Image 1: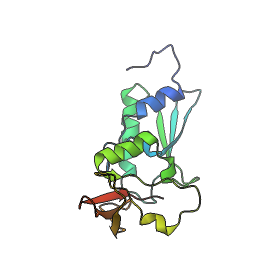
Image 2: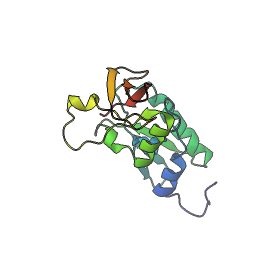
Image 3: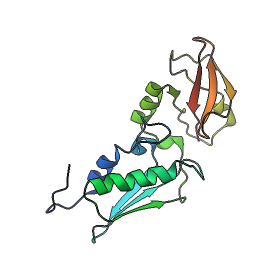
Length: 167
């Protein structure tokens, strides 16, 4: 959908366009659902600034995410795009949307549990199996395929699975 040249681009429109930008490591999860898109501003000059917060400091996927945001907005006719990485407010898994949590589960990754207080290390032990929904699980390793995942075993369906770590 190309923007109407007579109508100004809105923040809502930008966010809708960015829903198609996926996490390169978990391609079923949009950056919006992941919660890394922290803000959009549109200057009078038409410059669009998208503020992103990395999930982990030094996350190797951030360069890909930044490039995909720029390319998506360029494809929608936004010529002047700035993607700003911000470390002002740390990212946490509580920023993930419910749609994002469901997408993780359907992909075979246990979504991180939501939490209210300071993260207790015991929460890393808990994981609900994305296959059978069982809670009779054991963490096998706090290290998964990427920094943001841990390995678990379901004692009910006897399957290994990864959990997106709460952070």
